[in-house]
Image (cartoon, rainbow, N blue to C red):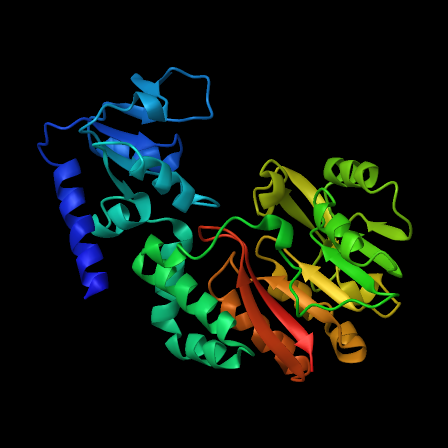
Length: 355
């Protein structure tokens, strides 16, 4: 009944916002979803705390404190902190607000749904048994609760399911069940700016070595500077995949770089099994969608070394079941955990801990 009530509330909000309301209408955020809303109705303006612009699409850009009482607002903050954005709106007196996920769901395809949610709904409809299999894999109740909440959000556009999560990027990949011993050999797959490697070193100062994989030259140069004070770090100027090859890459997307047919630069990729000969003990992968192929390229290390793994599974909903299928297909003596590190759809990590 709660879910029906939430959907009914979203439907009523949608009907009023896009109807002949006399209330002023705004969106929080300036992005593709704000544009989608603006394309459907005559907004009174946009709200953005982080821009110096005073006008967008011919409409005023306000700060939160400037939003008039009696207004209706759709929050188009959809990635790391949608809950925080909604909480800010809820603190405004006399303002009625709704998150974009729910409004898009209520629009019946008149507004584009966030791709991660739309893809999850399609994938779940095609392979419900795979998701049920994954739920039964987990080693603890917290993992099952994380899975259920993330799926409730993705399948039903129900942001309330994410109220238990905060933005905790500093804890990502490192949980109490991920234990370290002197001599650890860490593989940072998708090292980006070196932040995760630094967090690893803080937790395991007596490590053996680090193998740092980052395919873009400018980013790798920055990471080398950031990590220059640390010892025994081997920098690999390649991305991780299943074979050695050259691919196109979108290098303009920051930490969300993606392999792409129309990417702006060429990158080299290779299999971990080809690049690293020493035994490894902990592998972290956040490869913007290339995780399954990278796992195919490290089966020898998984079989021979039995390492701990922390693998991002949020880029593609199929990865929730494909990643454990690949790893447990190599060897099934792992405990499987799931944790989530933002308020939105990004940064869900699946852990594999040797039994």
